[in-house]
Structure formats: C-alpha cells, structure tokens
Image 1 (tube, rainbow, N blue to C red):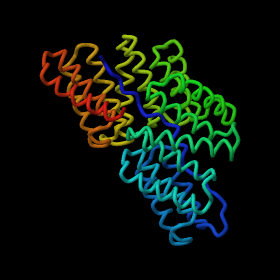
Image 2 (cartoon, rainbow, N blue to C red):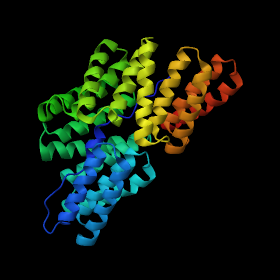
Image 3 (cartoon, rainbow, N blue to C red):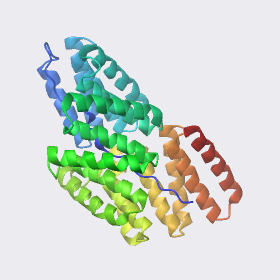
Image 4 (cartoon, helix red, strand yellow):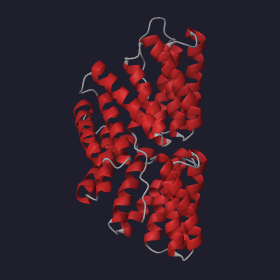
Length: 358
C-alpha cells in the first residue's frame, strides 16, 4: 500500500490573542511590541517575531507581574511562534502557563481561555496525541459558541481544527459537516478573500482528496491558492501548503508533469521560511519522493524519504504516526527494489507505532 502525508492545516495560526483592555495593563510599549510580533508572525518572519514577542513578554512581566492576562497573551503568542517553527518542546510549557494564568484571572469560560485550549489542542494533535487534542478542542468550541455566538470566526477556527482531527482519524462523516460549517462562517464573517477562507477551502479540499473526490477537491484548492497568494504573497508558508495538496491531487491522478513543479515550489518555500528541519519540510520531501516512487525513479525517491524520516523522528519523536507513514513509504520502496528483508524491519516498526496509537 502507498501512503501520502498531507500537510498540517493552518487555521491554528489565528490563535494569536489581540490586544485586550485590562485595568492597569502592561502599557503602550507592550501594546506596540505585541502588535509588531503578531504581524511578523502573520507574514512568516518567525525568527524576528520571536525576538519581538520575547521582549513583549519581558515588558509585561516587569510592568504587571507574572500572573497578569497580558503576560498570558505574550506567552501564548510566543508559544505559537515556536509551534510554527516546529519547536514543540518550547511551545508546550508556554501554552500551559498561559492557560493557567487565563483560567485563574478570567475564569474557565472566557474566550481567551478557549484560544489557549485551541492552541494546546493543536499542539497535541501535531504530536499525535489525539485523545488529548479532541477533549481540548471540544471544550474550546463550547466556550466560544457560548461566549461569542455560533457565527463568530473563532467558532469557525474551533470547528475547523476539530474537523482536522477527525479527518486525520479517517472519520470523514464527522469531519465534512464541521469543515463546511467553518467555511460558511468564515466567508460570512471575514469575506470571501480572507486568508482564513483560503485555509478553510484548503482543508475541505484535503478531505475530498482523502475520499478520492478529486472533481470537488481541485477547484477548492485552486481557489485557496489564489486567495493565499494574493493575501499573503507567493512565498508564504500557507501558499506552500496549498501547493503541496494540489500537487498531491495531480500525483494521485497520474499527472506528474503538473505535480512535480508544485511539489518543488512548496518544498523551496517551506525550507526558506521554516528552515530545513521543520516537519512541514519533511511532509514536502515525503510527497516529492512519493511522486518519484510512482514514476519508478527510486534513486531520486530514496534519499528524500530518508531525509523526511530523519526530520520527523527528530521533531516528533520515534513513535509519532508521521514516522510510521515515513517508514511505510520507505518499506514500499524497498519492496519495489527487491530489498525485502529491509522492508520487513520497517514494516514491523511502523505496525508497532500504529498499534500504540489505536
């Protein structure tokens, strides 16, 4: 069996927390730094964004102490930046501290608590801990629907991320209506050309890709790509995501001439924006290798699969589902090149990982 690894989907990027008005807040300098850090993160300039957000956190802690909601805002936004860079070990304790501050200061049902829950849930999703992720996403969604109303864009984000989890688990019947409701809310709340609409279109298309309904997926992907390129620029990581899934669609349809340049462009964007060791880079390497595998060009495919596996093992740990996917793909190549004993070892390791995650 051949496996495809789809990219992590991007609505979690909206988990930054905007300026809030609290009595005796962290001050004008913090306000300015917070806004600057969010804008740098939005445009994919993560290293600069981290420097600015760390300064904002320092200013907040100096001005209002360690347990103020403004400190939680900076912690959350800094965690999100580390998440986007694939540094999950740094992101998790920041998210947890942010959540604890907000729950104590604002109560368990405040929208900022929901934001923190959403982001921590997405971190657990990325790490393959789906049980933890589902529980937090459901709590985040319930808070947002009650506090903000069912038509708010933050509700759409929670719906999307819960749908993504079900999509990953193969429960497409649960995922599809959540994706559709999320998209409808975003189009109404933000307009048809907002980057989050592009992300939502991309996600729904990914589901149709998984279902083999390519006639539905292709126009959604093309619309997503146009929105993202116009709103974010041609070299933004979210553009790479749309390119990646569109390339996978063409790969599945056997249109390798269309797929290859899209995969290569996606890979180049992610490597430049996120660095060579980010999990998204591993996704792109894996999918380009898949194309060469399908073409029978195993000499090109094998080093890409090996590099992808090394990145995922380092970033996500040896027992993550993405590592299992990579092992299965490499085993498929070994079978095709008559290296059955090597294939068996990889298949057995992948099976153990899959069994652990059931």
